[in-house]
Image 1 (cartoon, one colour):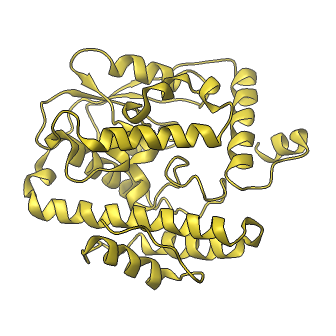
Image 2: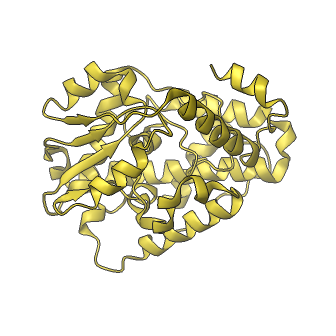
Length: 292
């Protein structure tokens, strides 16, 4: 694969798409619904003059990589038409508020025999379908290096998320499955983009879960049948659509004192803001009130 883009000027949507095509040699992005989010992304990054030119180029480069993997995903569906026939049966889904133990529970459940969770390396480099990968696939090590780089840039994050010590094999939450449709600006994939700006348009609940299912099908294709163990903090706000998409799902909802949840969530969110290039909140009380 060619080296990622180093833009000499701020690119527009056409330039981002063209660079992804040039790096992959592919041209079919599938349906075009993601282009609205892409336009919002380009305008947002272009407006962040405080980042400086190097950081803006890095942000645009991350988007080109995401678009490149989208091209490969579309190509895989042509090469392996059986991907669309994969059935996602009786997933076990952890829902609930962030910082209430959802991710730890997700990791524990995924470790049980017969279960599996989406892993970071699979999400970050999903083509060809990960279940077709041989032992020692280089994408696993590349994913571990990604996570090590991420942790180095976010001091204190590993203490709040100790399960990231699994590196490339860290279980990922459902929001990460929406990255290639640009329905979620997942931080580990967009670490150079200021956090918190809603440039990624989720679309309708039905579209959200259609994208969600498509990537699960891709990850499952060609592998042994194991039960998906999933986790997403956004599911609680669209439970009817979740159960319409996965009628046989089993939901687990952990609970924690809301005061502890909110305090912990504010600490994590403030840190991600600060180290992603967003101006760090100087008045933590005002920041907390703004998050209500």
